[in-house]
Amino acid sequence: MIARIIEKKIIDRLLNTKKSVILYGPRQVGKTTLAHHILDQLQLKTLRINADEKIYSDVLSSRDLNKINQLIHGYDILFIDEAQRIENIGINLKIIIDQHPEMKVLATGSSSFDLANKISEPLTGRIWSFHLFPISCEEILNQSTAFEYHRNLENYLLYGSYPELLSYALKKDKIAYLNQISQASLYKDILDFAEIKHANKITKLLQLLAYQVGNEVSLSELGNALELSKETVNRYIDLLEKSFVIFRLSGFSRNLRKEVSKMDKIYFYDPGIRNSLLGNFNSLHLRSDAGSLWENFLIIERMKYNHYHQHYRNIYFWRVYTGAEIDYIEEGEGKLHAYEFKWKNKASRSGDSWIKAYPDAGFSVIHQDNYMPFISDPESFAKDFIC
Image 1 (cartoon, helix red, strand yellow):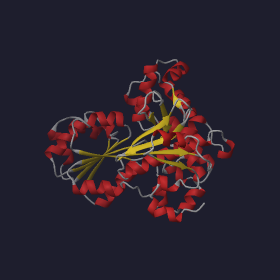
Image 2: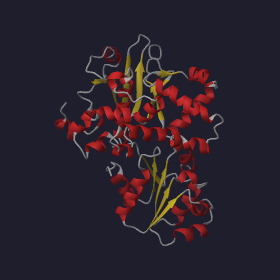
Image 3: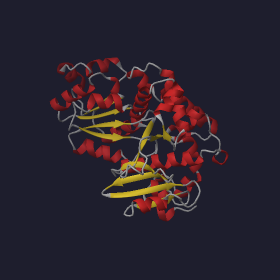
Image 4: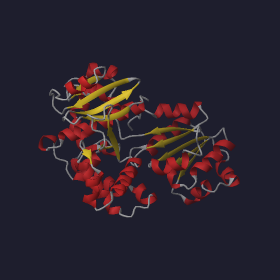
């Protein structure tokens, strides 16, 4: 098992606070495995519940304190896996937390749009939320070396970093695993909970978005291609975001006359899922989209690092009408920094435009020779990075 960075933080919250812990994340990223590993370490008397088991879900959706007390009596900690499947889970957890403040609660969920809506309002001030991603660069480096990571870089860009996938050595097994996820469970929560009228359009929409990684996305054009309204396309994209399949990057603008900010860019939480949707696992030297893959990879790995280390940043891309464009902007702690991503070590043509527009901001070009500090801990690994 690859050690997850947020494990110690979750244990600390469970042991040293009275709040519950909710663990969000895409399907298959290891939420259940991590939760059980944490529970085994705590060595408390634990009630472990799978929300698909009706005998438990009926009680935990009942709002009946007597039934709930009978279920949880004698336990120190309650674990609910896939909690979004239990109706009124927020209200019932509120009853448990308020009536049994000594009881610890840990719950997982693979869709924020359903779980958050059920939990956020009833449990305001009563929960800690964590987000688990596919395995991060930093997590791999904790058990390997920077040299080995860089040697396998193409694999991470082609196949991504789902935990189970990293155990497969053969290309055909990796592709089969990714195809199974993308076809069977990637957006299962949307179909289960969101009453989608055109379920077949979800896959087609994702395929169109996969082709447009790194480019601004027109909802109107997507709607025309799918024979759906612009509003419906936007709703589907919103649901896919809340199911942790894709995420948006908006345009940065402080001078609306020069800067373009009307359309978003859309990226995938895992590059392997994107390649599965395209049916393309060719080597990078055979692909015309290596730059887009590199861009998606760096942004999601940076997001993992910032999230796990609680570096709160607003993130954007930047483009002006003259054509200058920057791939990634971070704004936080009163600072503004721009990053241009290059698969090969080349100079940026847009850097001068950015510096001229924002002379007090930072600017860096990230390429294969210097990417490691950008997505991992620079103090621990920069001195070991050789390529």
